[in-house]
Length: 187
Length: 87
Image 1: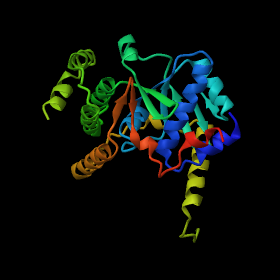
Image 2: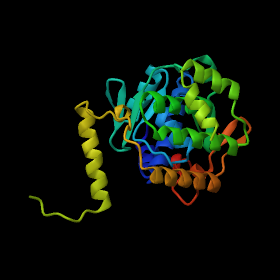
Image 3: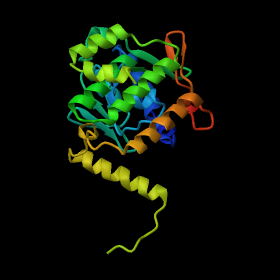
Image 4: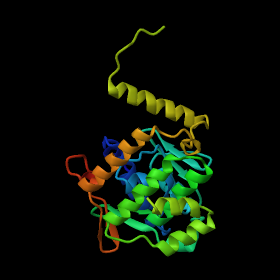
């Protein structure tokens, strides 16, 4: 990647925007190489959906490894195991595999978020991210995650879309978080 | 003992980046493994929730065709990577 572009990214003071636009540019490079658009999962997906109210220090990606690694090395990232770091951008990328553990249906449900004209990122769906947060609450004892799951419900409502309750319940049953889901929906 | 008591923000930012780079090189920088287990104070959590709702009201998300638009990222008051990308 050209250094002017790196400079442009590193000049973005807001780290939330810097990470999001970085993912958009990385996604474009990966797609240009013929691989599917990577999927942002976990905390970074939550950071983007909440428009910066949740903040994270790293970017968890599901992507074709070779194309992703090529693009990141071009961008001046250093590699260590499955992780990549760029000091100038102060961005840390963690590769979590090529596809979603949640399955093909979750991949089909991913959401394209348009950050600006021509700059898009692909995120885990809100329903799948809600289940991810409920898992964090139940199994990792991260009780704050319940609040973030509740906020994701509000965000979905605000978009004018309805939560896919059938899918949510199926996912909750598979991950054994039905109790968490029912508690969330009863609020 | 260091007597320095005043730092510019840029100094701290540079020091933090350098520290993260060093930790990464040593294989010790793994933010994803740091799961927050200590819950926030309920009042803090409520305040965080209200702050997030305010953002949602200020920047209401909407669908444009098949894509979701999150207006926060288009806020022209802040630097925009896209406008300068090809300059």
